[in-house]
Length: 552
Ligand code: GLN
Image (cartoon, rainbow, N blue to C red; front, side, top):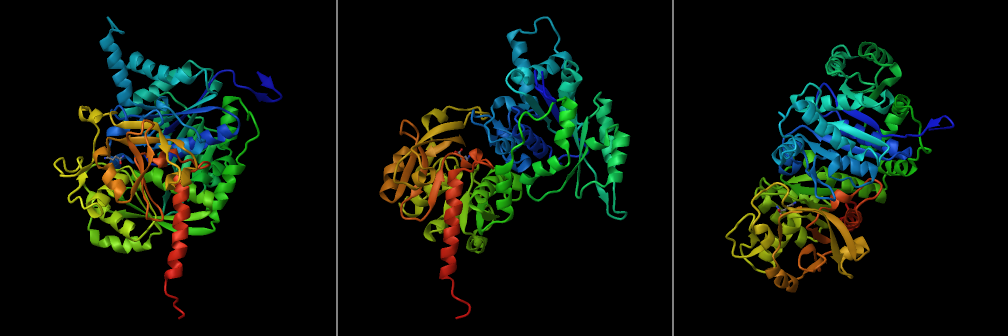
């Protein structure tokens, strides 16, 4: 249908993002930024990410190897790119958006066992490829654009069958229904100072060898592409110069959509898909927030005490949630990592730098005693504290040991024979033997009591937040903890399980069994992080007042 010179979509369009040369070029960020630009132009966009590994989901992967495990509302444990989509699009995704090699093969093998392929030998083509295309087509009728991000690099064994499935999907569509975007690298050879195009050419050839001619090239580089480079890439890769897009380094990821817009990527996509904007592009709110980050009024230093601190990606949702809270409160967040699996002696120096400290989630005993020592100091020195999942559990252990005099109190995750199992499995978890997908996962309601810090921060009686854990505060110890000054401000709807704990005699000491960082969005920060950042700023000012005046 044509209205004016704008063609309205009558069937779904597919945008497919592949990557070449090497991993880590920011395919996810590009895809999320595109999704944002398209949705800001009035289109409904469904992003889907394919990961080639054979895990059924990301839940069993060590964050140290692959970055944080992100959790969707429906409990799906996913790659951290899904978090980028949610943060950019300000919407909740579901399990459809996260497809892995393991998931595809599990589906096929289950079908084979059910007898759905009786008499046939099951092959990559057509069985695996059909499984993929029918998964993707599930959202055909409900969205305008499906945006498919192919994890890994073209030429990998892990994603070759997936790319083949997409080639076949494209064959069943009109040429104007599919737009292929390939992300590559343009390095600069220091000695000659020249932008080199060969790796890009080689990568496009690999894609062409798979039967795919990319429509748009997103060339990652340190500086903007010069025009000679653009022309060379266009000529050798069989692409119009205007469709060679420069994706140069930007320190602030939330500015990336503006950079892409200036580079004309939206026009290239619209031309290829023969569509135009459905509504006038609106990014004013986004712009205001970016400006606030670039020109903040205050500044705080927030410590994150964990054991994966060498890999920044392991706590990516937490650092992003802090940025969001900072953007909305005009506070620049300087986050520092406090390694809790090494010597506890170094802690003091780091603590003194911090205006607030977060102890994030985690699994296993390594680093736990460091977290407990850190929390003791936070409690005693009245430093603003946010404990997330394991962070709350460590706060309870510390309080039990040092305030309630329950010597050797622990979680049974770390010491099954502890005399005081203040953190323990509920009976329903005791009979769980399969590790994959069996924790408390996804969004659950939490009831908040009035007159508590949790209520002040959230401003309502009922919230919904995302969980990912097995252990809980042991109900046998709640009355002892309460008598000594702990407060249980958030409970499950039946009142039987503690979801939020806080300290009464402290300016801001709160821990949650859920992960508030997973629901924080750039345009809609999580209230707990906002409250925490505000309190850290106050604490910093108080600290300053107490410092001796150097002039005196
Ligand atoms: N290991 C703890 C548990 O399973 C905490 C998990 C977490 O921090 N996400 O309950």
